[in-house]
Image (cartoon, rainbow, N blue to C red; front, side, top):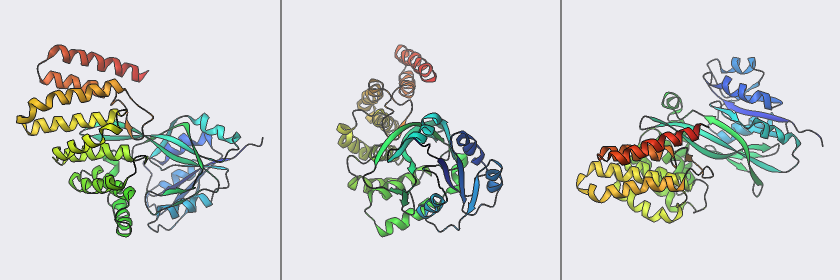
Length: 354
């Protein structure tokens, strides 16, 4: 069996902060690294070339699929790994490199761990995304581009990639760019559930929660039950409704969606957060809401972490739920219960770090 060639294929612009980390993490596993620069005026190009990447230029045309496809055209490899500069390989390089001996026609799915700050705390959520492509596969769509490969088999690989572009200190550099492109798409297709979801997400990332809710609600109307983004859409809708102070609408959504997410710690975690903020905002409701808050987070522990879910936050089925229950019972003066969950949090954190 002849050995296949593997390439890293990237589009970049002003990524001097992170491109070296990305290239260094990938270099041991690929035969070539292709970087398509769309107009950097920092040290991105020099850094990429110094690390052995082949750098080419592309005039940005406000179309991500066009740029991705132009980069893919430069590759002669049998397999192309598509990453952004703020992503890097954490683990699983060996499984990825094993594709050299794979003759199947498939799309490889990797796990990306997204770092983000939520209410001042670092959280990591895992998403499964199709980023390992056979030579001939291309993209379509000017923003949040999708693969043009109908019916092709997709397989999860043991490749884990980190991503820190959602952290506060980094996301400001891209503010407005994605929103503008998404609004162009929605002007053409106002009811499109995927673009409504993505625009809601974009607005949420920049704390524009009331606006985000509008687009999430449009997306919920038309998103199929088995769409791979629906879990994230529901959980983000609950969060944004909470942040916008729309507690009753959040509860109605939770009641409607609950039968579908009995396996999701993220759903019950978000529900507990909604109920807690409602109790704080309206103390007259607290007597009814407090038991529901505790049962929501306890349900998270019953389910446990579920890494098979798309866009699941690590720890919501374990140490993060225990942490919330510790703080919850401590605030109520129930010291025995608080101590129990404090000890459980420490134990779950210990297990998680193993």
